[in-house]
Image (tube, rainbow, N blue to C red; front, side):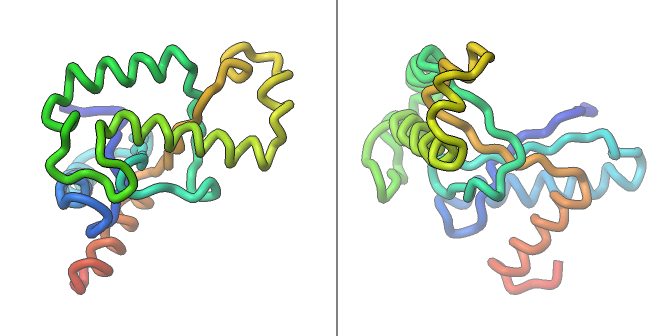
Amino acid sequence: IKPTIISLALDPEGSGPDTHYKVLQAIAGAVKEWSREADLSQLRILGYRNVWYRFHPADADLLVPVSLNALAVLEKSFAESYLSQVHASFPSFEYDGPFSELTRKTWVKQLKQIQLLLGKNFFYENNNALIRATHGLLYIKEMNVNEFTGIARSLKKLSEGTEA
């Protein structure tokens, strides 16, 4: 009812099925209304992208390491939780198969992008075992209420030609 963290697909209109964009706009409207009656300065809004639209590494605030085990859990949980998406009605132009496979490929590619910037030894020789075991990276954009509603408003103006 009063979350401290909201996560959502931060995809612009036209980057895939309309669902992500419509949910983004609905959440932005709800957060805007909620902010009129409550202090939301501590609310964390986490936007992710992975199948339809991708962050450039500079646009992500959080990089979440993904282990081989997490990749295996992704495959199994996806197949059991999202039966309608195993053979998607709207397959990606990049891969006509389970979205979990495309997600895995994306996370591995994102790790390679950061390895190029930091060097592979940052990962292979890191003191932190989780970093050494990283086989992919999930990019996330963390936003406060004003930043999130501003992004939603900009996307709405861009896609709908409105003054949101």
